[in-house]
Amino acid sequence: MSQTKHISSASEFNALLGSSRVVVTDFYADWCGPCKQIAPIYEQLSAQLSRPSKVTFTKVNVDQQTEIAQTYGITAMPTFMIFKNQQIVDTIRGANPQKLSEAVKKLAAEADSDGSAAAGGFGESSGARWLGLSLPKGYSDVTDQVDVRGLDLLNADSGFGTSRTLFEGAKPSALEAGKGKSKSDDKESGKDWVETDTDEQLMLYIPFQSTLKVHSLHITSLPPPGNFTGPMRPKTIQIYSNRAHVLGFEEAEDLPATQAVKLQPQDWDEKTGTAKVELRFVKFQNVSSMVVFVVDGDGSADKVRVDRLRVIGESGEKRELGKLTKIGDEPGE
Image (tube, rainbow, N blue to C red; front, side, top):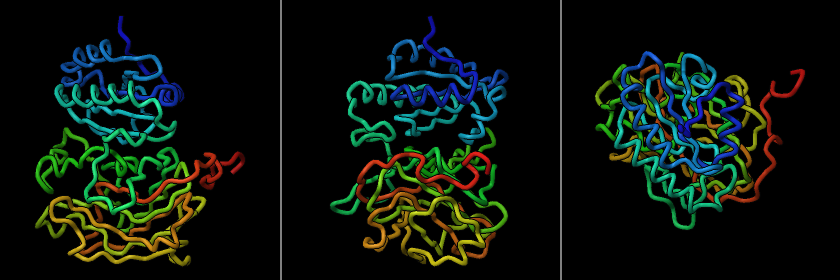
């Protein structure tokens, strides 16, 4: 008998994410040929690896559950997402049985052994998160403390990834296939990066599950090389700490930033396309949320591209989720 759960609503999916340590999700469509080809392999993995409250396999029909598909930025089928403690740790686009099997078996093994992982994060032992730069001595990757359910992103092109894409644990696809020449450029593949929409500015609200001491941000941007009319890397970045909601663009221009940074071409790592934004540590000691404002890009094009973002520092006390809310989330607003 199949162990796979066919999702019938967004509330059911959210409940499963909260009740199972690892959730493997197959986003598919009935008309999708590759989806049908890999379905028996997915069912076999489900039968072998499903564990009550530990590993749950689900299927989401993107045509029937459009809300879920839009929430996770699904643009290609099949797309497999693996969640650990309610956060995305891996995304596999396309019918790749070997890659799917390896990723699922690894997380299933961790779920059996990683019982101490925090309810809202990955746990230190997950080892699934890609990093574009080495960590500074004495600090760790605390991106697992991002509360992805509260993320907000303004002026992002809907044809590309969502705010959650920036915090995916997987290596950017542009690096998998050669810098700037990603398989994601194919019409049948998803685009695992964010591009701005109407101009070069981008506004990202990042709430955290605990109070952090933030040392730096690692920003990965992999625009196609030699394409002067294509998207640019970020240049000027303004950061605001402990905001209750995302800022409007005009609002941000009137507020003093906690810190402003100008990235130079030499700041970007040649191999990974990642730059380190070093923060004034004394100003980022008790951070429960952060707004990252990309003011402009390094060039004359109209768009900016961001592939990944990592938060580096120290985690502190777990905060009560809900203390920081976005405007409009309260009843009556």
